[in-house]
Image 1: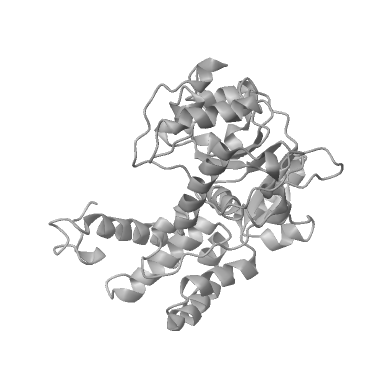
Image 2: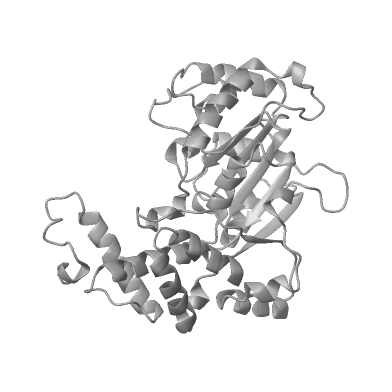
Length: 367
């Protein structure tokens, strides 16, 4: 076990872990507040200060900096097995934005109830969150951490650690201390690891985001792989997010005992409207115009059940409103062309070429 505790890399002071709000130490897994470990409490306070400082979700990098970046409720349902006919119907509905129709047949799960047992009192130790690209898996992970002190099922953990598996330092970690970065006191990571190992992770919730992005890249001494296989911190709780395509690889690596399997469907019609109203909160004249545009162009509207698409379309619409050179897209092809131009213009910002390419129509041909 000591092999996984000792540090093999020195954390840098510029790297941090995740984001969330934290609670005062309450009871966790039968341990009273009086026995809360001061080392873990200190680490929790660090996480709290970092989580509270983060206001922008990963997908919001596509939004204009002048707009708000809200979190909107996602439609989440329990994953069930479908026969081929049902799956084809489900896929067709989802591809065409039929989230509302799906929710007429399935009961949605609130984020507050994600860790609540479904049928019995058996603790939920492993939650698998599945969904297609851009549907909100990462945003849900961040928002869960933000609600640490608000959700009863989260308050029972002394430490909630969000690790984005796409980060190289996470994937390449060879000791538990490597994952427990504490920039102001790097040597403190080993002490934190020691305390977590003493309880076998019983007071820890790991939120592992983006398994599909690294599913084929685990090396033999990966700490994450050891946690998934219960070789390290066997009593810790895990929330793992992934795309459906990586499910077979997950079973090859560890064959986890999944206590709860949920699927993110994205935005309902109501939440789409709410998202746009919040995005253009400081530009009320654009709210009404965008909603008219959304309902007038079916191809665009059908894509907006995916939150990332909402962010992208809002970005493109805003850019087209600010520039007479960029028309509002009416097809998917036009949307992606407009997005490419917007991203290229943003790429040139801050460079010597910025003044030459201040509008998308002035970009060099071929880009």
